[in-house]
Length: 410
Image (cartoon, rainbow, N blue to C red; front, side, top):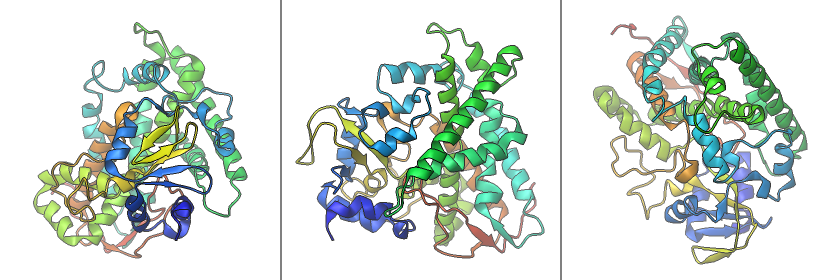
């Protein structure tokens, strides 16, 4: 089959459960031009180079795709992941001040106890049930509760935030043969509604500060000043979505992988000290973010012997690079003790994932508590039903039965 249809086939929901044969096909060519004039890059070293290449723009305003342009038409500025330096650097540094080092070095570590407590309470809720949906009952409420607590979002508003998030993520679906206009418009409306909600919450924190990240952002008098209100709204929207959405997939993909590989699951039970390494391997083996869509070359560039013209949409297929045999030994094997594991699970370069430290802690705690307390978990269906998005790939539901519980204190 022609490599010019690879993106179409990857986007096709029929391949969502197992896109890896398509990524292997892509790696055979390294770089593949598509029928729509875009280019896919699937090999590790080429992706790594492009992620650090200042000639490759992440600025959404350089994109030529009308669907992408419509998706961003909220009247608000793009978030820092959608702009280039120096604007990106300024916005990211301002957002980082209340989140992590050097200004707030203990914030993530201080959440560890809360994350353990939330995970334990959620697992306690499994009692008396012979079947659970790991997504709805655990993998979603854990990170969304954490990010709401971190930002200072009232818990009672979580259902409304989930509705907006679902619409925004659905707008990323580019399944072949489907008209994207309705999803794009719904996603844009949801993004604007979430931004307005978070902007109003920030206004309340200006008048009545609390011990949360939004209060710190609106009262930060650092040397560069504060974020302007429109910048604050888009930054908070990004933190809200990215702060839980990819972690849901990381936890769910992780548990699915372990249930499919009982030897690895039992090893982690025997050697819980391997969990940090196992989470890194899960980020390589089943990354929650499969690709970075539509980077834009600012000039003609050569990638793997192929000239990609200025302005052509460029897709960096992170999940393909993570399984490149030229970089990783036995890349299709899950090894919870793998060394030399410099994966693309959180991207790389200046746009590497802002929330990676929090996601790592959440995944380590979540999987450790599940393995400790679920004694006989079994998959109800394999493969499970997947979410539609080819970018943020993970099961929509993951039904598990036989979940006899250990005591919380054991």
